[in-house]
Length: 484
Length: 92
Image: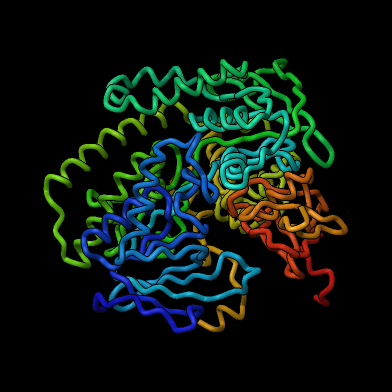
């Protein structure tokens, strides 16, 4: 396929467009990849579900001043670069449901994200693909977590930063990882009372990685800033403690907070009831890798227990022409995503437009990537999910929110029906069979299956893969499929 | 302000900011749930807020199963809570 100008259909609706590089996801990684590729001479498409660039990290409203955002000047710079480049087309509001290999490259199948605007099919052809689809909150179920008023930590941020809405007046923040801190401080700044930040882990373990900290002090300074904000608002920050149950009939009115041992088993007698009208919860992140899986890319189990797409030195996946950047190839935060994105964009432009990147630029980016990955590995080591979380489940706790599958039903699939892996559990008991296709319950189901099978074992790559494959990544109508 | 963006939810008028999602506007108006599940009939509203979990499904202008967290509120939209699969009016 020649590097010809993009060909939009005259009506702009059911169009087919041809590019050198298509970048999926307009967060930090995708923005860096698309601007690097366009600058290097590649005709580039940047595709996102949202109406604006920025992804979840820089989620913002029209006219946002950037207050409360980190690295906002970087977004402004990338947004201006993306908007002002004639080789770069930003294609907003598109839900990508499938990518297939076609002669000369790939075909990206998408539909309009706003269904109220009518379902419009779009095809985007490209010679190289950069997958920068990011991640979403990883969840562990607990009794009452399906009550309205319980939100993912990222969801409370999205509602606040993207829509100007505070989820409640008195909010409990719980889970594990440094992301709980900006969530709590943003809620407090917006006027909510934060009943406490309940960190299941004990992040003192981070001190074991002084070398990584020395190489990348920025996030630690941010962390110190958040802790100061918590202190100013008199928000308790408690470690080895989490929300083990939410209470209420048609909405959450209280939670039980309990102490955990080092393996996260609930310490008996430590439960405390706290009134609140909202809960924000997250246990790290799950990378969105359905597109690499659709294309047959190799995966690996990352240090945080997540299934990620395996990327090589040049950010290339195992399938030729597929590049990976940001959380899809290992959760590591926005600054690492920017570096990986730039590398992916430069390499994708090299293979399609023939622009050889300067060796010094590649060396500089590769060095930064190493330091940032070491820092991310230190964080993963400091905030692991420990298997004792299963001790806070009741038999009737729902694991799968969509299909309303309980812990007891998952257990029965293993102990009575003989399932030995997560995929068979899914087929027998239906967790992961609903509309979200296992995005929310996949990790927990894999943990439960592995634990029941191996007496406390952790899920392996195959367990997670069994609940991660989604041949159709977004809802599409039969009419649309028929029209393809 | 009569020219403010509004949509109807059941028999109520809900104000929304430009660019705001239906789900965000409903939360701002005090709602926490607007769907019941297919099996247990349990109430659900927004959980993930970013289009991942499909918990916040709502009927918009007669179309069932729209994600309230992603669907931008438009003036005059008719939004209804969704029970089960949201297809009670269909013979299937």
